[in-house]
Image 1 (spheres, rainbow over the protein chains, first blue to last red):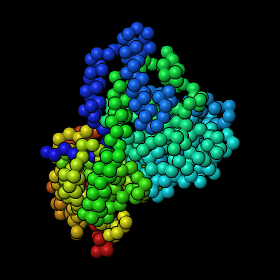
Image 2: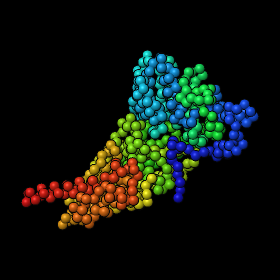
Image 3: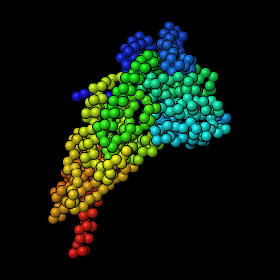
Image 4: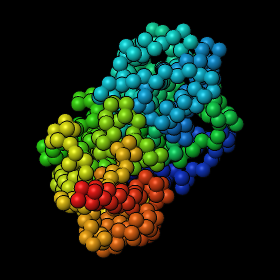
Length: 393
Length: 128
């Protein structure tokens, strides 16, 4: 059976070049980068080269890159570290209602511990209004955290504008760029961010490694205490194998960015066009233009997402859904809720995120298989009887 | 996640569809949690002569609806009322823990359909 992986926003396979470099590294180099002997120095050399590669991907300096265990830890460090460092200045944080849970739940944790958090709404495309950010800023605002692009619906947020506003008001600005780095250009200067989160496994690197970009001179307090690695901001012996893989993945992502961007966008557009043509009563979620090139997110009226995922999986196709039934918490997607979708259409959502392995034949296979699946599930859906045609439009 | 029996019922659900002249109809679930299951019954001489269902729901909802119709068909109304959601889950060889409450509602829907039939029957008797 044909296997089609369309869940690249969840994770990506290791790039072959990353894999072979990691194998070579882990076979020969085991030293602790903090050691002063030749074994340690050798490992240090590799770690610093990777730091340069990661910095280059986002046009930063290597001394502004701090390795963490992944995107979640980098988000936690950015938010908790800023909150702790600026406690005396204020206790107000601004974020959006569609952030990844790593940001959202960290902010909610702070809310329970004496901080005040403003969760900004988004429009029907999932876009944050920079004016809302401006209006939310108070004298005691210490941090703004708005994601670069949304992981579910792919909407790219107006980060440059928010960055200017943050700077005018001298508020620290963090963005989670886990979904954008390596997919669209990310330039920390152009974006005007002070803190930026990166993850390796979304760009064909290994899991368990990520990084926080921290602008030079910005004060942050650590969350993990211990041996003082990563300039005392993130203690713990460096995950050298992960770091080396991440560095290589970042280098490849930067090298191939334009080509991969255009290629996946062409395929994605073919997928979207085909689905809108072949299946009635479907809507594309997220912004029609300002969206990640590899993201497509649909809601199919009258059908439930997990049933679609199971049916697709039986045909070898891997995708994801914002349906409550397919989430660990059994809660409908907070992102699709925030853009105002009715419950039926949240449960009927299907996200397909493209990547390196996909080609035109994959897309045509999905376009052949998916209409049958939706038709079958609709044939025994009680909702299909209740609503008049055109209801989902 | 789901066992083979559940997947088999999900892929080939039994008795899906409507009964246009149903003796009773019952619906459970709501769109907030994501599962809706509607059951149609045809009662003849106190026996569930035909049982059909439709669902908007996850794999567990589709499979439990299918299994419920298999268990209920041919049973008396009284036996149908004794059928539990747990019986359905057992017949399916078990459901994932998190699915037991939200998606395993088929027996409840059957009971509602039987109640509906009872009400209609007594109303008809009242008129007669």
